[in-house]
Length: 397
Image (cartoon, rainbow, N blue to C red; front, side):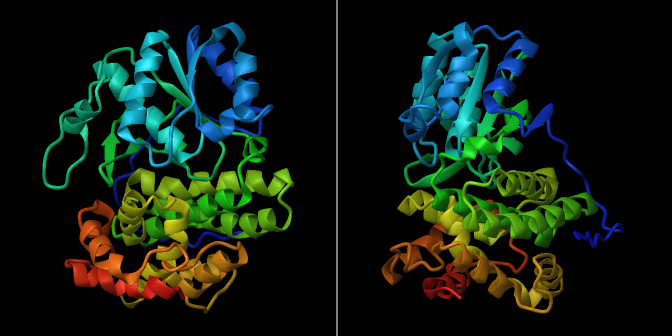
């Protein structure tokens, strides 16, 4: 039985999404066509990555077939970490096609790139450098993003457990740096959670993004800004994921645990998206991902246990609640998460990611530029502070 030990006295401001609906369990092709019909879209533009485009009968192909004459065009070259150049190229192709609805089919990189495409299409941007004034900066104002009165929107069909389809932030990479762009209408108006759409995703990738979802739940629950509603989402999401991910690993072809994991990752991200934010596991992960092209799922596998061990001195009581939620009451949460990583056969150390000691100082310096590192429950003020976490992650727990 799932229990939710929520502190209902914990106040705060709950941020609400502009998402209109979430479609659970229906075939993705059917759900996308129904949405296009609902909003009267006649020129639907589809985005994806190269791997899905090479399938003979995958979710991308089924969606395009279902759209029929409504399909106006496609861009299937979006790479990992959503490079600015890919965002611009896809936006220019969508503009040329006269798109009145965007449909992202893929993981977090595809979905985030498509969010950033909306900004490009709203503002008529056609050059990678033109994105620069709009990005979020610490301590500096960014140029406001204007969606206009009747903005182009998007639908997302997720093939991983990244949960990008539930946030209003687009993560884009440029010059070895992860950059963020935010607008309330970036969040897909509809998110489609079809477990069958995850079947073509390589199992290690799916499980790693599931660990990323665990990271969302844990860091938002431990955040200083968390409120009672965020606690509820995080606790429910973590309980669902802790059960579903090992079940997927044991029986990769079963749809029921995949749908449970999708529900879990949805709940897990809502704590962060509704105002709690995240911490150093995410922030250091941004530095690792942008600098060394490490998938965000793998950064969570490696960094989350180390960050939890470092933070335990200031939030051990909250970590204890989460360990119990994962079925391991009384055990250190850092160990519980590290054991889950091993159970899923995922990398658990920086060494396994090929990142040696000679790179750690650069990672520590870069990590301090990211907002989640600055919000970590145990303050991180200097590169030496970050190095303490990186040393824990070097060999894993």
